[in-house]
Amino acid sequence: MPPPDATRPAIRFRAAKAGDLPAIIALIADDGLGRGRDDASLPLDSSYVRAFDAMSRDANQVMLVAELNEAVVGYLQITFIPGLSRKGVWRGLIESVRVASRLRGTGIGGQLLEHAIGLCRARGCSLVQLTSDKTRAEAHRFYGRLGFVASHDGFKLAL
Image 1 (cartoon, one colour):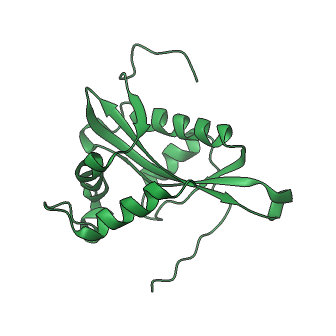
Image 2: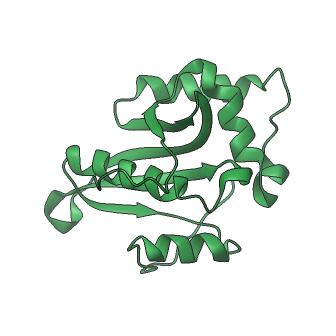
């Protein structure tokens, strides 16, 4: 981890708690894609609570929040995946990367991903991968600056 930089906000990283769920869903819903797919209105839909509970019980799931002044301002999920390819390496799959819209461009997203990559290393992962919607050109440039390479095309099938 690089030394603290006075120009970067003092962010604290920790595992998400159930009480963070409204703030997390608000972050997820706070963009063009999320507004069409997610609903941060209170009370939260019970499906979010069920998903959070299932992820909390799964040792291969990490829900990571970034806090600034005790407020949740960033979130991502890491799924640790064992595999047989590449001689049986573990992968860290990073999903749902979000930073509060008012704080984008301040370095929080980079710090959040640096921390997540460190967690992947600590778990013995040999590869970190993520997906990003094709419409998120800014996010693609951001991931590229962090060293990620757009090496694959992804496919999804809605069920």
